Every structure is written in C-alpha cells, then in structure tokens.
Length: 263
Image 1 (cartoon, helix red, strand yellow):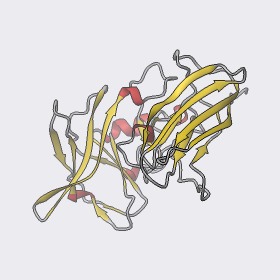
Image 2: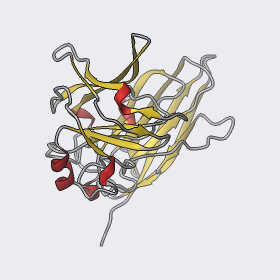
Image 3: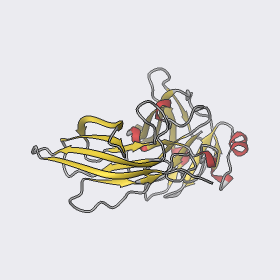
Image 4: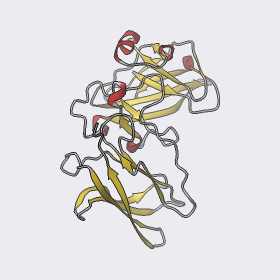
C-alpha cells in the first residue's frame, strides 16, 4: 500500500493525482481513480486489495482505505512518487527512493514491515526521515497517524541541534524506538561528525562520518552497534563535533540512555 497525507492547508481531490515508480528499472504509473476529498492533516491509504489491509492491521478507520491499482513496488528497493497534472503539465508533489536498508537493524524479517515517514516537514528524500513500522501496530499504520511520527522540536536561539528521545527503548513498540538528532544550522557549509560511546569511553558506533551538513540535517540511532548487535541497556555518550564555516570548532558531549521494557 501507499499512504498519502495532506500536509497543506487546502483540500486535495485524490482523483487529481497519480502514483508512480520513477526508478529506471520500472518506470510505471497508475492514475488514482478515487472520488474522495482529502482534507488538511488527514490520511488516505491506497491499495490494490482493501480486504487484505483490513485483515492485516488494527485500523482506526476503515473508511480511509481505498482500492486502486499501484505501479510495481519491489520489496528491496524502488521509488514512490506522487504527481499531479495541472494545465497539461506534470507536477511532482513528493518523491521517495526507498530501500530495505532503511529498516531498523532489530528487524530480522523485513517482509510486511512498512517504512513510515517520521516528520512531514522534513523532505521525504532524507533517509533519516523514515523508520520501520512498530510491531504493536502490525508494522504499519495504513490510513492513520504513523506510530513513529515526530513533531518539530523547538530549538533555542544559539543552539545547533536538538536531541529527540534522549532516553529511548529500541523495541519496536511504537514508543520512542530511536534517538534522533535534528540540526538547525543558520547557514550552509558546517562540517560535522557524531559518535556514540559507552560509559567506559569505548566507541560503539560512528553515527555520522565527517561530512558537510545541510542546515536541516537529521540523524537517527536505532540502538544497534557498529557490529550490528543490540546495544546493552545503559547510559551512552553522544559526541558531536561541528566546524563552523568560519573555522570555529565546537564539541558537545550529551548523555543518552538505551532503556528496556522489563515487564
């Protein structure tokens, strides 16, 4: 299935859009022949088999599920694009190049696991803006709010980044399954890196290699180590190094906690 969310302040007619797989290997599209008005901040799930979705997921509202053909969408990798025709011209509304490597390292069998967008105000093209669906919702939330959604935090003037979920429990229950670092830089050409250390000062993971950062860079940690193992429960240190465009070096050391549900 493909889920559509109206992040605008206007009403969208679903029959005005089409869904495409723009990857060179496929290059297919399907017009959406659904007579439905999608109001702001509402969802619609489009699937070729509505009965299958109804049988698989604990839905909040079955009326948000609509049946329509989809282009070929392979499990391992591909593209999902939403386009619309206006005055005879194709307008690309949104596009996402997906890959099964974007799933949580805790999921051994990725079949049937949805990739959910974390923040609708962050571009779909950013890999860190996607997370595996939560186990508690059947690994997907077709037609209603994503279990992994994060609203934009408020970053104080003068700060470079915000840590979302500094205490998190990577157990795919849909509640704080990952830690996220959201940068809000006031200009381009910042150079940065991030590492995770345990409480003994040993490096656990190079979370972000040395690279030029976009002003709105987002980085996730799902609790896996460099060896692909599950990080032990406890306190860790997020080490962040930033070089400003003027050459100033800033180093930050922030505590984060990997928690577990002991029930």
